[in-house]
Length: 148
Image (cartoon, rainbow, N blue to C red; front, side, top):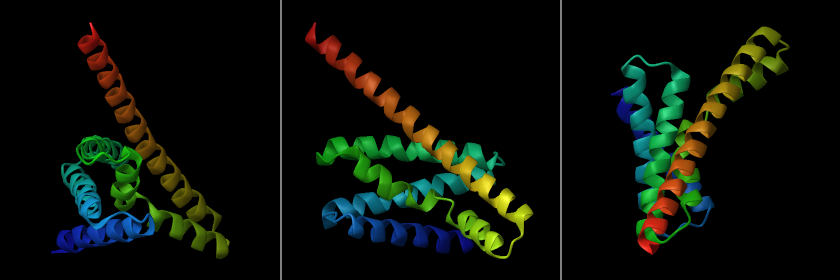
């Protein structure tokens, strides 16, 4: 039951960010599906027993691959889908706990939570960048083969 609530929150959060970015309703539904898929993949990987940072990396990479596919099919820049679809993965709770601990002057908790948020965000960024890089390399290779 808790997973259903989390997945619903992921969709609603993605829709909210899509609205902020003025996405059209037709594209917004695909971005919301991306948010669902990003959090669902993260949950599956966590339940499989993988390290949380690796889960963030893989979930962000899968989400980016989905965003690249949707960008091609809807003729929209991929970054729109990447940003809106990865919103559920952002380590907001760790950032909140870090800032709360700083305000309480509990430097041990602030450091631990801040470091977790930093490493998790870095793993997400690595998944996004590497997937985008591989996709661009594949497109260039395909274009070069079609040209010759």
